[in-house]
Image 1 (cartoon, rainbow, N blue to C red):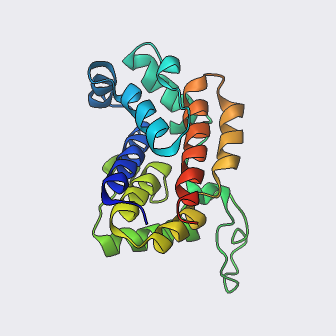
Image 2 (image 1 turned 120 degrees about the horizontal axis):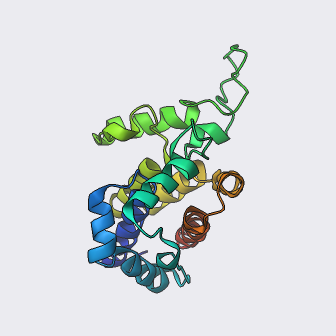
Amino acid sequence: MIGLDKKSDCAHVFIVLADLYKQPTRDIWDEIQQQDLLKKLEVSVNELFSIDFSIEEVLPENYGEFRELFMTSIGSTQKKAALPIESLYKQWTQDETWTLPFARDRIYILGDSALHIIYLLEKLKIEIPNELQGMPDHLAILLELLAYFIEHAPEHSTAEFLDDHFDWLDEFELQLLEVTVHPFYQRLTRGLIEILKAQRNSYL
């Protein structure tokens, strides 16, 4: 059983990680620059998960570069980025009754995983941010839901959520390596995979 204080601290780590997968805003940039957001994140990850996580040193030099890196790495189909959306990396549906030609294909949004997240969000009365409309299983939303589960759900439910919705990140990481040479999102994603594994192991 994880203590309440540690649950809250772990949940906060995943909230910060979620923000880093969203389109950078001036507010998040100011928090990084003025409040040492990334340094605090690194310390928390080390203390909570015993993982050496170093990301501040590869942060783009300015806000404009950060926004451009987001678009070319994980934020734009027009720039052939590796979009962090679960449905794109999984068979569109497991329902054998579907006869659509693409039902067994991947690379389509709003598949089974997205429908499950929509169901959870509606049940929990959590709204999807405007910038992520149409992408309910975007990684940022999954991480925010995970944070909610850590604080409010039974541990077996959180473990099941981890097993169901984060098993595609290795493939996402490979695609990310193909679309960008800048290490920021690469290192962020490698660290996230290790953190999620440590969180899952805490329920064994």
